[in-house]
Image 1 (cartoon, rainbow, N blue to C red):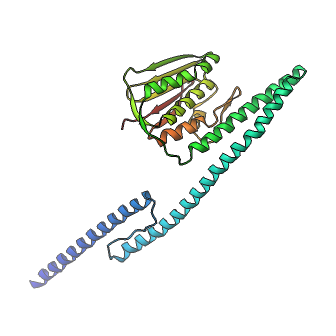
Image 2: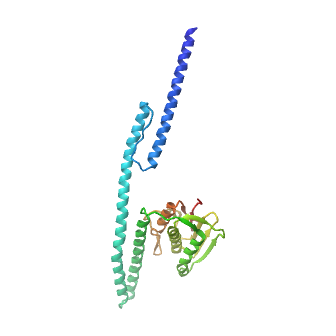
Image 3: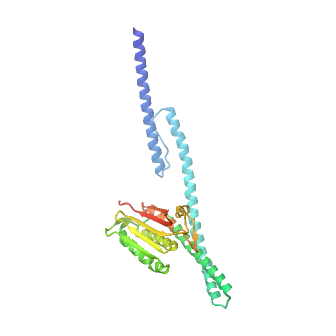
Length: 295
């Protein structure tokens, strides 16, 4: 009669001990998870330290600390390399300006000389490619500057006004390309806290890209929720190409035009200010959507 009672007591004690053990392990696991998340999100050299005395949980924390040390070392090496790359890109793009200026000077001199139609054609091709190289060099320089850690200056802006200003600046280019733009800007005042220079550069780069690729049309809409849509016909592109338009150093050329880095800069700036930008190819049209959520 007493044996079953003793066994029950022992089982009850074992169950209580097991429950306490499970509770402490769950507490330790939660503590490790929280501290790991904290270490990954913060720029700190401290490691994970837990209150638990459990050997297995402490061993887990120690293994994670080893991985954290390796991750931080890789991050430092990446940041150092990224800084060096940005400096090199800035220096190279700056140094290219001098020889390009000289090339344009000699082209101007050559074009004043007597020459055959064949030579004129060759000079035209050279000037066109040199212009493209100059444009890419300037975009590369601007990209390296934008990608630097220069802080943005935030202020409350009216998207309606900034978009109208940006469109007005491209009026000459739009007319020259024979484009008939259709613009719909909401009468509702759309305000967002953004950097004015960065926002104008985003709008300008997107509009400039649309002008290059447009098949004769350009649709721009700004809705009351802060979403701006740019759309134009682009027969020479496809969904794969359009999906890569925001990639760094990915260029697309059609009829002598190249996207360069303009859209990459637009994406970088938009994301720095908490916005989103996407590109789609729908029925032979490029559709770029830019959204800044209200904060």
